[in-house]
Length: 327
Image (cartoon, rainbow, N blue to C red):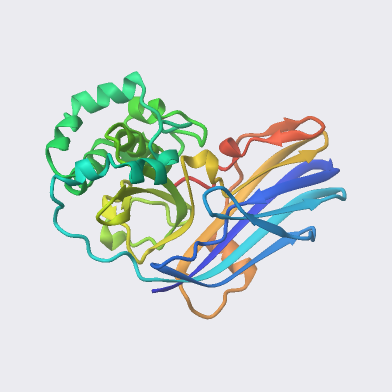
């Protein structure tokens, strides 16, 4: 499937700021299941772009706008050909649990076996595990167990934006019984790691199809998880929609949790309040759409939260990017 992704991020300031420095995790991955056909970034005011690969192999772009400005606009355009992952077997043998304990897996996946950031076990998570008898799933082979776990999370939570924020601990979603894909992914990652199954957070996009039962917001970024099973390598699972990832998923970056791979983060200098508007569109590739039309279709809205920055203040992307991560 050939997909076109447009991701527009606009920061508006109520007074001129002197400088902005940003990092971006927006370039789709190049892998066996997806081919990056094209990727381009536009920044206004204009800035020279630099890039590097982070510790997890993600493409990260960064730039500095050193002159005064009252608005910062970032437009990322991608064309990606996706194939999805090969059909999975119905089950694996229970010896897979022993293979997960090998020195190879523990060394290769060290970062994705430990609790980290938002993906940690809490008393609320332990109560959730006990209430739904989740640890009983370990009687199955690992592949069957994680599939059933995905179904439990899907059934246990309603998808609703605005209940949690991008920096909410998993307890918020656990207490409310509602949340977005970021919350469901962190919960599932924490449980899998507790089972000693390596699990990582995947940030990306989804070509939403309501006829397939998708709950995700079509005008937002998306997130899911990947688990490492020695017999299959990395397997993508989308607990928001209770599906194995396929050709409608576009992976951008992987990390231990959301904090490793926010779409953008940075700092600015100046005494100003900021507002954020975001528009995301994922569609089958076709004739390019003019930018004003795209912005109307994506219907970006300003983040309700306003924040006054001191000189060289950190833009709290884990909070402001919630508009972007209302998955």
